[in-house]
Length: 135
Image (cartoon, rainbow, N blue to C red; front, side):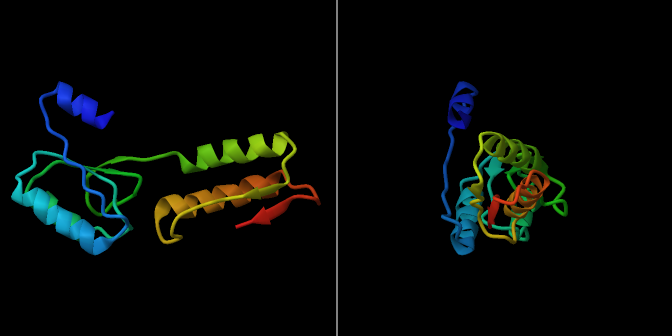
C-alpha cells in the first residue's frame, strides 16, 4: 500500500530490511542519506534511536512506525496494543479457550511489553481456575 500511494504521487519507494540487525539498519541509513531520499517511514529494529538523529539533523521528514521514541520529536504511527490485545484475549476466552499463549518480540521494545501486559491483565480479569497463562 505504501508503494502504491508513493507511485501515485510520483515517488519511488526504496525498501530496506534490516532483519532486526542494528548494524544493518545503520548501514541502510547511510545508503538512504547518500541517495538523498526525501522522506522515510522507519520501523526500528529496537528501541535505540540515536542513529535516527542523523536523519533528523539532515532535515529528512521521518515517520516512525510501531515504536515510541518521544525523545526524537518525530511523527509516530502506533498500534493500539492494549485495545487489540484486550479484545483478542476476551474474544478467545468467550469462545471457551483456556490455554492461551501470547507471542511477542523482544521484551525491551514498547510493543512487546504492551502486548505482554494487556494479555496478562485480560486473562487474569476473566480467569477461571482452569485458565492457564503462558507467557
